[in-house]
Image (cartoon, rainbow, N blue to C red):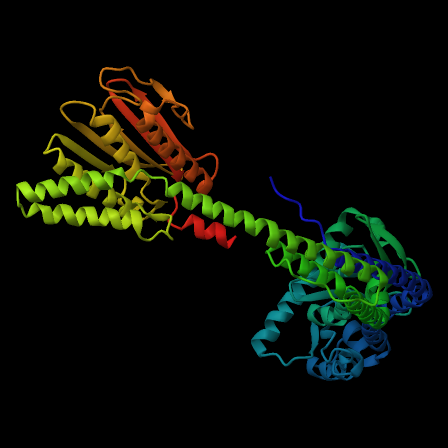
Length: 599
């Protein structure tokens, strides 16, 4: 289960303060936006409407130049003669046509420095063609263009209209019928309009995102423009209605400022700008004010945070001192504060730590000393009678056999004496060392009983040899098995030692095939699981059994003191078949007593 750690008071104060400041700042900005948008909004809308009209007017100026050419052609007698009754060579008419049609005029190239009209053609009823081009053409190109215009002229005459529009990838071709003042059809004039120039003229609309435009003929047929708008205009002819001034229009759920303007030559331009661009312009206008407001808000929040941190320094000190007390530094003190509330906390805290320090020093440490003395007392209760038996046996062996084996026996016994008497400051040893003590003891006993006693040590994993165990715990149990289990049994016996690991625990078992727990030769002992601690005999003739049970109880209590109440000994015995004693302790490679003393 996850533990929910509460937020600190300092953090809560900072969050609350910042929330109030930021909330006030948001309300201020909202009011500013509303005020500025209402004041500036109308001016910006007028600016957008003026931009729409100005863009349409720029395009109309270009078409007006073409219309002026038509009027000049109708007033020129030489060219009228070419149209009605040609009498001279086409070269003379061509020179006159070039004088009338000046494609290099500023009216044709201003604003974008590119020609709006790239070519102008004059055709009479005899299919003769006069052509003027902005860009110089090769003779082959001239012939190809003249042939193309002648074919388009044939289609134009077949339609029976006064004006006809043809659009290809790069150009728009406009064919107009020329009339006299008496409305007599005298010929045709054709203009080639550059789409590239038209797109450059309309590029000014890119300043507004999602703006679209379209160029249409008088029959509402699209010629060029934004692809998405041209598709919609085919299915919605209401988009092409001409209104004198820009107006609001909703299309596909979005509002636009919409403007339609009729041009010369029978052309029409449509331009639409999303109304949300108005908010963008408003934001650009008041952006500097917003930046100042944000900077001011950040400065206020920063100063507030610094002030709160300064005022709540005692909270941080109190938390730090509490952590020190938690770590065991019970002499920790808080300083005096100017604030009455913090001074009261400091006074109570200092009194509390003084009391805790007294209790730890006077009570807890005394208890530790008593426990340490109790541990040493329990270990000192191990039965030392084995030392005397071995000494007697070594003396007899030395007198009778005079064998070199005595040296080995003496060495083994000296190690046992060293383990029992010396290093009393160490209650724990490694399992490796404890098993050495056991083997020394069993070797001496096997020698004593001249081979009638055998033993076996089984270790599940060599890594267990580094585990820490109570000193002489196994040696005591093995000694108990030999003395009280196997000695009363005629014919010797076997002692088996098993060391296993089980779910982080170290399990050590000592098994023998002796008389069984609490039995004498020919008598019935205890059966099955033996409860601990053992009851002590009261009769004087049972002094040996009493001494044995005191030792087992001492070892059982020693393990509980070292590791906890859930650890200790367990005994299982069957009369005449033997006894199994199990020692269960935590599997650790550290000295648990040193660790406890440190804590």
